[in-house]
Length: 110
Ligand code: 5GP
Ligand code: ZN
Picture 1 (tube, rainbow, N blue to C red):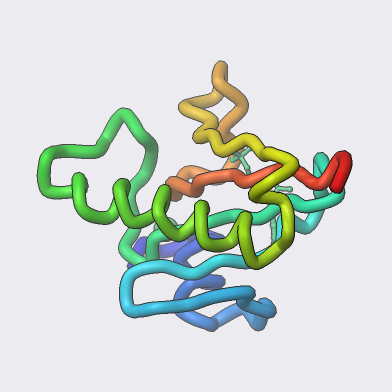
Picture 2: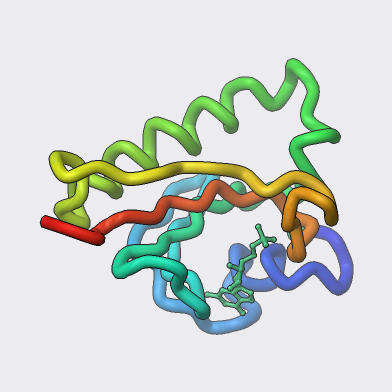
């Protein structure tokens, strides 16, 4: 756990947050400032600073973030209508929280 990292604190339940889903490797919760009717963040519990820092050792967790996103899209009822999943990478890419997280947005039409 990285000191002073907001998403480490959320993932380790030091800051109370309602999880939509949780397992041993990741947590899913709603974005506090949603950019779409459905806006989820899929966040590994283990601290990884940015996509620029991933190595081959992270292949399993990156793949799990995507497969859980697929399940969450279904759970939220946006799988058929469609959605976007993306990482913001570094400041110029819009990254504000330096603990990787996959955004899932959708729900513009059902
Ligand atoms: P980034 O720009 O780093 O890719 O995305 C960070 C996201 O985290 C933003 O969409 C922002 O609204 C969200 N966020 C920031 N702080 C909190 C928080 O305390 N709780 C929740 N649920 N979302 C947060
Ligand atoms: Zn962290």
